Image (tube, rainbow, N blue to C red; front, side):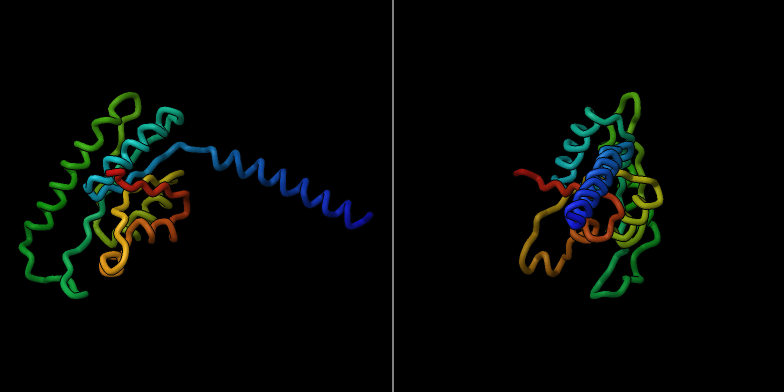
Length: 169
């Protein structure tokens, strides 16, 4: 009889915790969309637009400019204006992608430099992001091994939930 009471008390505690967790889970006030400008980015934006119809969340579109690399080392002979041109081009493309979010709460755009998965996770943690909606290319095999997967690393390391969207075509 004592064992049965303890189990009942544990279940009540778990149900209470679950209800609290469910209300925390339903909080969706800030959505982050990391943009790599691939065709899958558009699919991630479409998902975020659909979510925003149900939850009036702020949206941030983020692009991370990875350093030029060659065989594991940074390339030192890149012209000085190449980095500036990359950043200006990325900012222009982010603004273009943000146009569907125009309205009462327009999307914010952010352009950073660094290792993409790390910059995405750090920015999300520092800016109280509730959900990351990000594109993936869906590579597998040798291509996945060679290129790695930013989406996979973000899913592993992010402090908030991550919705990974693959282009349906």
